[in-house]
Amino acid sequence: MLTVVVLIKLIAEIALFALVAQAVVGVMAGADRANNPVYRLLQLIGRPWVRAARWVSPRVVLDRHMPLVAFFGLLVLWCAAVVAKVSICLQIGVALCK
Image (cartoon, rainbow, N blue to C red; front, side, top):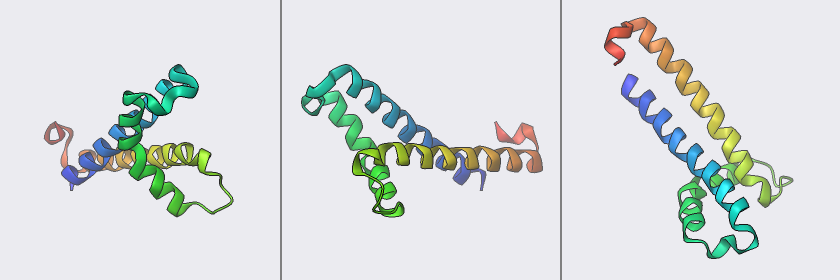
């Protein structure tokens, strides 16, 4: 069970960093960000989470806000994984969690 929780936490971390990096590169690249290969790679990594956010959220939410919705959803998932990991580690012993 610990392995599953650690993998969920890892996937959430990768997606969170990709979304943050995409926002930073988007700000730095400006209006020409669609042609930036780094931005497009980060967009490719974050796209499944943005689509999941679109699927979960109501249609009232604008498409341009979907990366932010995905970020906060992943942040909640990451926090839940951290709480679960701490709980499991306290149950089995901290020495076995390394």
